Image (cartoon, rainbow, N blue to C red; front, side, top):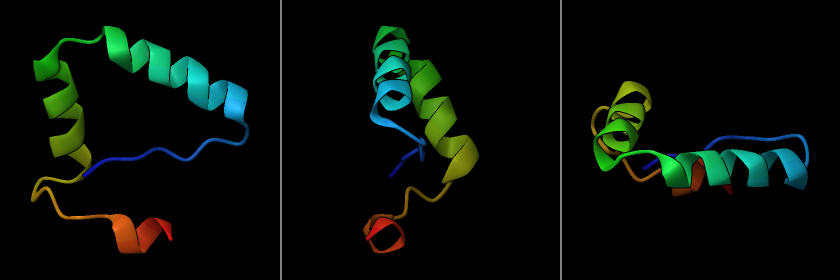
Length: 46
């Protein structure tokens, strides 16, 4: 339902650690801002 593209693994890991500290409601707001219908995005990233 949500993904971010990063140029390298290091920036992706830093972002992942940031998001893990977020409250659940903040994560849901992030998802809904980018994907309000909660579509499966698998086909977009493959």
